[in-house]
Amino acid sequence: MSEGPLTPEGLEAALREIGAARYHSLHPFHRLLHGGGLNRGQIQAWALNRFYYQSQIPIKDAIMVSRLPTVALRREWRRRLMDHDGDGEEGRPGGVERWLNLARGVGLDTDLVASTSAILPGTRFAVDAYVHFVRDRSVLEAVASSLTELFSPTIIAERVSGMLANYDWITAETLAYFTPRLAQAPNDSAFALAYVKEHARSAEEQRSVLDALIFKCDVLWAQLDALYLAYVDPGRIPPGAFVPEEAPA
Image (cartoon, rainbow, N blue to C red; front, side, top):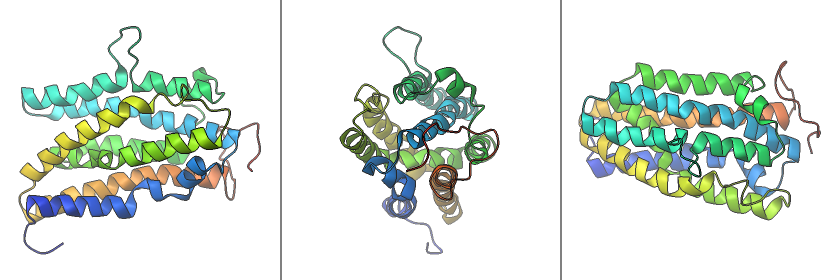
């Protein structure tokens, strides 16, 4: 990054470059997941650990709502809480409930999943670090850390099409979590991107925004690192973590 501030368009381009280089769609575990390279137990481990991330997103968003200074901003961000927690109406589950349905669909006990007692330490450390980042850093950095959603429609499309093509025991109903996200994520990222482009004016502010996105990419990458090391290679599952019935392929 040059010494002077970027234009808003230049900042957006720099953010997109980070995603192209660092987004977890590039991780070997993700490529195994959508390419048919995992067995049932490894996919169960992914679903169980990913639930912790899903369950903490509305907590992160509640923290964000408490920190935003205007009614309009709080109202906009509150919509994300509804997306993940749902509104309590039958037939309109939020993302947390839909992920439990996914976990059930891949053969997991949802009580075990919801307890989060069997997740990997690396999963917990990475996700907790994200929640703490949103709590402790500036509002601008917290908003910027959500910009991985700029890249999520691509990974969702790869994941859904690949898993349906390569695992005959996984159904479209099991993966229904992802359908609303194809619309929600672009809406959320458009708002966050506009906010960042408007408020990150100085070179220092822009550097903090770029670093926030790098941090969030690292959070997502670290979760897949933990899964790969525990359930693929070398296959060292930490004490207390989920042990699949099916051995690694």
